[in-house]
Amino acid sequence: MASDRPRVLSGIQPTAGSFHLGNYLGAVRQWVALQETHDA
Image (cartoon, rainbow, N blue to C red; front, side, top):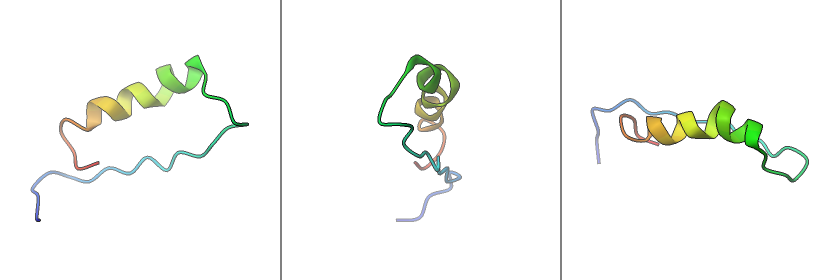
């Protein structure tokens, strides 16, 4: 299905097997917001 919304791709890679506050504040929170306006 075609969409007029731009597509976003994170390219995230695992970091030593742990998810920490820095991941959340630095990137994940922004990616969640981008899902509202982009195909993700």
